[in-house]
Image (cartoon, rainbow, N blue to C red; front, side, top):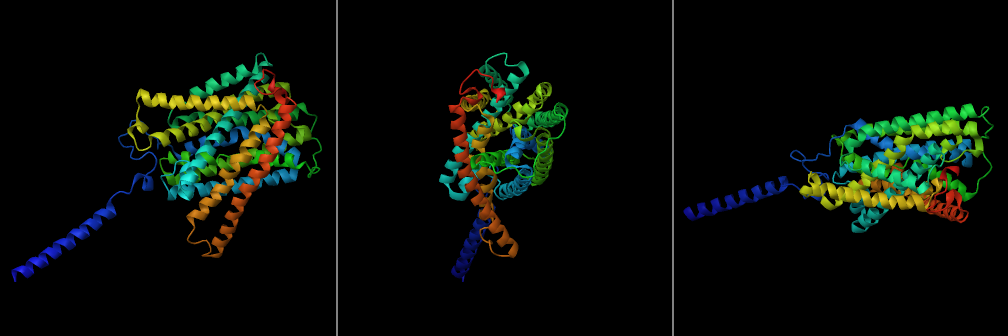
Length: 462
């Protein structure tokens, strides 16, 4: 009797232990890479990152996205024609809204994602991470370079080329470097509001300038004569660049207090840019016509051109700073993720951040001096990377998120076809736009348009 009882007791204990172990396994935290966001538990952290309200994220997204692209849209209308150009602006804006929302959904499903490279790792492993590591860094450096280039153009306009253009670009480099030193995006939200007011004020001043300088609206046909293929591709690439903030969205959403608020920030961005892009492009193109310059502020007449550029100083600088911050944060998080240095306020942590800032800004300065044509910088960046970040990759994100139910309902089948189209569209824009951009760059460098590479010439004349 007792041995039998002991056996029963032993079996019961084993059963209880096995159940206890199973319960324990079910409540044990998963590895950090599987379930935790990039910054982990910040309750005791020295530097807290997840501090942004949705409107702060929205203002940073506006500063990052609207700052430079709007200045190329009137020229895009001149190349494509009024109706095709407006359809392109609306079409790209609508699609970019959908793809940005898909990025937010992917982030909510995989909270550990902090960058496109993290998402690439989920899609196809180490190859995806490595490829997007390189791609997004190159893209950020090129965008930063375009801001330095615009800063040098602005200084040449305001001072009437009182000094060497290289000196002006160095001044822009130093100012941008200093503003990139804070490690939290929340710190940038306030100056991002200034950036938004700045670009709106500059564009409004430019629109007032062209209406006063010109005798009245010129005749602009609804459909222009068929442009050359590479000119049309470059114009479309510039429209894409105007909406090309997607590469930074994972990083921005990671620092929201409430991740579920990302649609509010996205709505603020998309409504602002679509209205501003459409109004500015129509008014400036209608008064200037096919001879409109890019950036468009160059068409506002000498006085209003100076006033517009003076008002645009904050957005010229801050737009580049936001992109630089996201690039630096990407490297910093990649190196220190899961360590105490992530939230440290030590001198070493600050020096590492500053060193990364310095390296990226110097590289961007080389880009600004090596390709001194505004349209070419925008077109090359858009064709190589924005086509994928804004269209192709979000299409792949949707396919991955819904991989078990592609054909479950009619709605899913339609979305499946649409996202396959997005992947194809990203590939097509990349190939065709890259060809057009490279062709334009070689032509302009051969003709020394814009003063050539590393030149003291006045680049505001082109």
